[in-house]
Image 1 (cartoon, chains in turn blue, purple):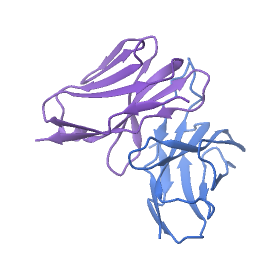
Image 2 (image 1 turned 180 degrees about the horizontal axis):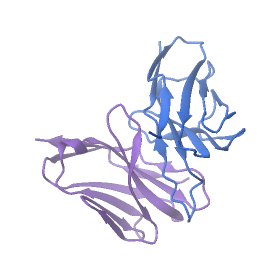
Image 3 (image 1 turned 30 degrees about the vertical axis):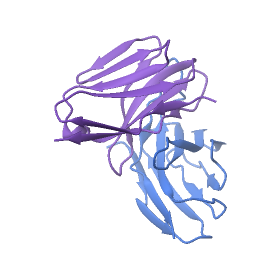
Image 4 (image 1 turned 135 degrees about the vertical axis):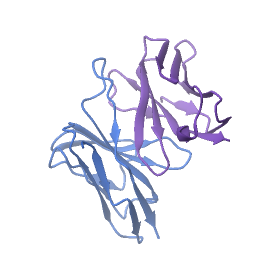
Length: 117
Length: 111
C-alpha cells in the first residue's frame, strides 16, 4: 500500500539534544513538507521541498534542519537551538505544487510526538 | 498577512447535522479545503472546492462557499460517532505554494 511513514511515533528528548524524525513516502511524490501542530493552532510549515536536493524554509524554520537526498525521504532534525520543541510533527507529500491545474491534495503521515524532558 | 479562522469546538447530537464554519481573508484563494484529523493521527483530505464554485456535495458532506463574505462551511448530515475528529479549513492561492490553515474545529458528538 502506498503512503507516508513517520517514525518514531513518540520520542522523548533531553534538553540540549538533537533528534531526527524520519519521513518516508512511496507515493512517488515530488513535494514533501514538515508541519508542526500545537494545541489550538493551525498547522505551521517548517520546511518544504519541491524536488530532490532542494528545500525551502517555511514560516518557523529556526531551530530545525532538513535534507532531501532521495525523492522518497525527507528527515527533519530538531536541534538544541529550537527553544520550544515539544509538539506534534506531521510530514506530508503532494504530487505537485498547488495550481489551477492541480488542487494539490496533501497526504499526511501519522505524526511524531516529541516531548522534551 | 492571510488568515483563516474557525471556532475551536462544536458539539452536536448524534443524528443531527453539523455545520463547521470558516472565514478567510485572502481574496485570491484558488482552492479551499476541509481536512479531517482523527485522534493521534495525521490529516486526510475530506473535500475541497474551487473558488469559482458556490457549492459542492459529496454524500453526507456539503460545502458552501460565499466568496463575497469569504466564508466557507462544511455541513455533515446525520452526524455519526465516527465523525468525531478535528476539522481543518485551509486555503491556497494559485501562485502561492503554501497552504494557510485554520486552527481546527473539534467536533464532539453527544449520544
